[in-house]
Length: 395
Image (cartoon, rainbow, N blue to C red; front, side):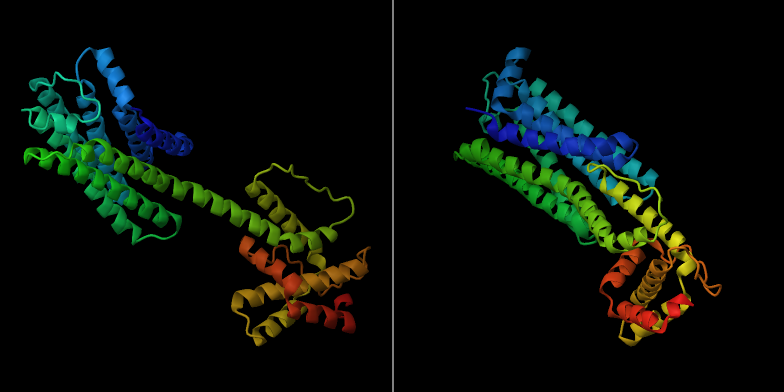
């Protein structure tokens, strides 16, 4: 007899909690984060103390046969309350109303915990049962009521959790929706646990013997449900971070063309910030954007709006949308300006008609469009060839 089917989900809850703790440390006043962490702590405690080896150790330490029973049932009830409090905070609404409803659930389930302790004290359970206490004592006065009460409280919480997470998942998108759907699946397994327990109990009351369903099938169901639920809590956090990091690296890479071109226009001796290979993607992105804007400043005297207007009109004529046409216009100005700057290293042929454009882009998205147009747009290439042929970039 071992506790692997209990300790594995307990470890999964501990891993989930580890992912949440950094966010809690920075936003410890957030009731939603506190609720999630409380749920994970209680879920881990339930599986740890419900494992047969732990039950035997606690009973031995306390000197009371089946002392673990009310302890585990109280932990399960507290876990059920944490589910409901989490639901209330997820649902949101006026803070005062959220706090009021949370307090009601907490008080209600606190009453259940007190009742569980009283019922155990009134009952008589002298024979230690490590796995089948629920069915062994289901006909014993007071112990019977204790067992039914904790299962009913757990069932109510699981039903409400499934209903709210399902409803919320229909209103959101992205990784949050995926996480909610996974949590729903996990709590369906929790409901299956309750169904298995009640099936064995009703069988006992009717004179049949389905104790194995309660002792061996139900723990497997709730273990699977816990693991799935843990994944559901992790998915939105981890996957969103990965997605954000991937998006940042993708933007950083797509800005490479514009960055390299503008760096070539910088005056000789301009310092270049070198980033360590382990630098975060966000920091690299900020530095690259800064270098690009500095490049626009250096190239400003050579930027001619006539080439931008030409590129804009040609881009619209080829069916480009407004944002793309604006990016092509800036890329055309940059391309011709780079060409002019290359032919005029001493800066002697900068015409007085040119306007200084310090920042022709608006945010990283526009910079990415400009970078793409600079490398791939046939309109930009055509404007650059026309400027070279007519010498308009040198006037």
